[in-house]
Structure formats: structure tokens, C-alpha cells
Length: 257
Image (tube, rainbow, N blue to C red; front, top):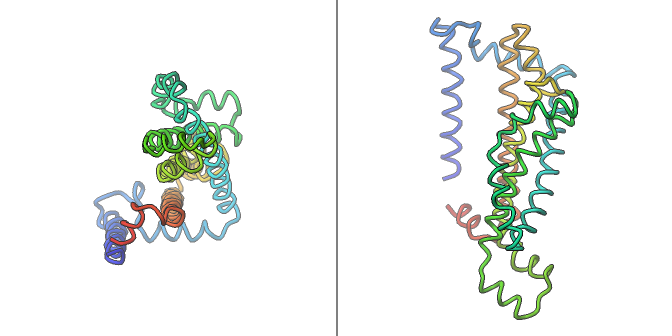
């Protein structure tokens, strides 16, 4: 049952908080490396009342949202185009397989060269990483179209747009939402990583400052914030998926269970 799963999840989180509190208090781990939960929460409360903290959160979420929007728009457009035209899919298959495994962090020197430590660097890496998540899922969705339904649409002389709208899109949409959900998490990871490494404005840069100034409880508090953002983004993506795909049997089965 959903309530039981939520309770188990909360109990696991409570156990983790207790463990982090006990380990440094008992001297098993030095507080300079892992402060107790109480100190981390106190640091988090202290940060939450400062304007600089909320500006950093806004900077990270801005880079995340803009990068994700660009990646989703590009991934869906390119994926539908390539997937719907067999010649294009054959021509681009090797290129996609070559570019997709390249780690986004390997492009950090290029991003710094082009944009310095501005928002553009973060967007470049976020878009690159999130784009492939969406593109691959869209390609899978287009490939999953029922050939009988496609041939039927052709026999009724559906236009290319009508085939995409009434045949291809309903089949690909669950894959699109899966790609968006994966891309949303990856985009947040890359946004924070870029800020952490090159000092672009956001939570990552603040974490780096806290670490370099030996404000360890604050550093952990900010890391907790990034985790909470990730959880919130994933929950929002799942809720949107259930809402817009309520007609799909995978969502109906998930809700029923």
C-alpha cells in the first residue's frame, strides 16, 4: 500500500538521521568530518533565514529549469524527426551512439572557454546531459509504434502531421515522460556540479565556499538542500506523469496497486 511504503521510507530516513547523530557523538567518526544531525539542522536553519541562501537556490533552479526546457524541446523535436524517418535514423545512429556516452563533465573546459563562469556554462552542460535522456526515450517510443496502426493511418491517407498526432504521439508520450523524469534529475546533478567546479552562481558555489572556509555543518546542510530539491523534482515529475498519462495502462496499473 502507498501509505505503508511512505512509512517505511520515513522510518529509513529517521534511522539515517539517528545514525548520523550517534556516530560523531560516540567518537566513531570525527565531528570535523561528519557533524551530528543536530548541528547540520541548526546550520540549515541558520542558512534558511539569509537572503544569500535563497538567491543561490533560485540561481540553481533557474539554470535547471531553463536547461531542462531547452533539452526537452530539442530532444522531443529531434527524436520525433529522426524516429519517424527511417533514413535519418540509420544515418544518425552511429553519431548518437558516439556522442551519448561522453560525460558532460568532460565538457567543462569547453564551457569555461565559451562562457566563463556565467549561466551559459551551466546551461551548456545541463542541456547536453539532459538532451540525451529525452532523445533516447523518444526514439524508443517512436520505434514502439504499432506498425498495423501506422499502415492503417497511411491507408486512410493521414497527413504526416496527423500520423504523428494520432498514432505516433500517443505511443511515444509515456516514453517522453520517462525521459523528462530522468532528464530532470540529471539536469539538477549537472547544475550543482557545474556550480561546484567552476564557481557559477548557485548552491554548488556556496557549497564550495563552505568547504573551503571549513564551515562543515553548513556544507552538509547545503548538500541536504540539494537532496531535498532532487526528491521534490522527482515527486513532481511522477505526479505530472500520473496526471497526464491517467489514460495509459501503466499508470492505471500503478494507481490500482
